[in-house]
Image (tube, rainbow, N blue to C red; front, side, top):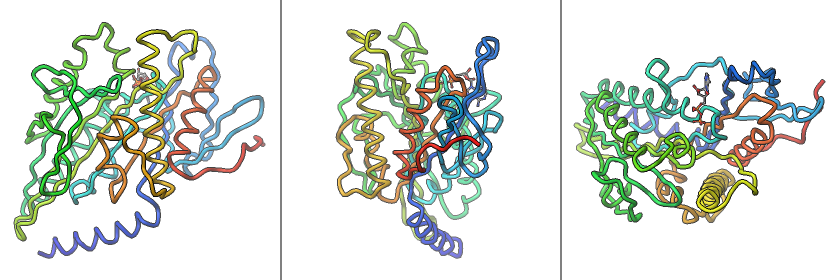
Length: 349
Ligand code: ADP
């Protein structure tokens, strides 16, 4: 019972803190220069002098440095860590974590990681199971996973026997969250099982595409983790969702380059990324109308964006001078999403 009271107190305190600071966090992460970029002698335009204070500078032209501020700035040398939002999920909150940025800037590196350097998805799930185990005297948790993809404004269920596109219909569970009708929710008991489910999702993603890397840079890859918690003392149960989203590449394609199918893809990506930006910035600036229905992605995530749900966006950037215009465009997007802007460009001293 004591644990329960403490949890309730913590929830109130957390809510007060969040109310003061908002529920939206933006972390910026820069990848190192690649070997080929080093060999070609590309200069780095990203300056990390004030990274500890969450600031970074971009050399735009000559000596002009444009400053950006985020909730956290990772230098290329910084390690991955588990998301700080995990206990929120176990305490009954909905959480969305996104990776946004130009293709090749480390979105998959951050979210999926590798066998030796696990990403946010794995670390988050590992933490989830660990905390669930620590709390097992008081709570039983039931965890299930769905793997989805949004491509050309179509939702595909990657765990379905045949992953055809789905109509988006929500049904409300007694605990308040919405389930997506007809989507596979695979029950998982351990991190190992989750890993197998993720592998199954990845292979389904590749089916029907000629080039897997190209396909994944043009679709949003979405992992949804549903956590049902039953309090063994009070009998009360809560349900919460954690969304882990590797977004489609944000690069703008040259007008001359895109025709036919590519043009349609590019328009759909633009549309859904700007819809996501509009929704989060409307939430950050506390606007009364939140335009969830403007894209499949925001519609899908509706019950986990806003209210007391927590949002974390990683904005991924390249350090290279060759990518500076995409980098500025990503940082401007992330600044708008965060709802707080720094002053005009400063001169470098
Ligand atoms: P995206 O998913 O945005 O297209 P990737 O995650 O595939 O980009 O990253 C592109 C390349 O850069 C990969 O080879 C990846 O290992 C490397 N990379 C990205 N971020 C980092 C980092 N912080 N440290 C080391 N290598 C990185």
